[in-house]
Figure 1 (cartoon, rainbow, N blue to C red):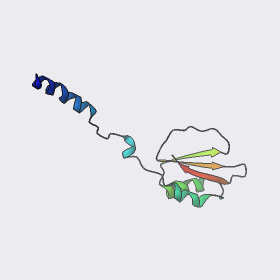
Figure 2 (spheres, helix red, strand yellow):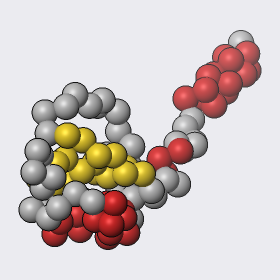
Figure 3 (cartoon, rainbow, N blue to C red):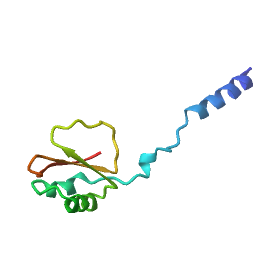
Figure 4 (cartoon, rainbow, N blue to C red):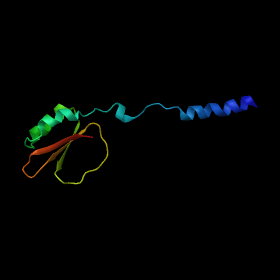
Length: 94
């Protein structure tokens, strides 16, 4: 009886074992602090490229102030918010 119980418990133990296969473990991370130096500058193609290089982001998303945006988390994405004057008012990662 004890042998049967042990054989039943063994597969159950493996079912709860976890191995990290999370894609985020290997994704590049955006460094938000580096992007803060661009606040107040003009939103241009060149400034976008510079922000990507400074933050290490692989994806750039321009967002007009007040526009809706998704809440999904992407560690390699930098979001740059600009206003009517094309001034960068926020740089966030995720």
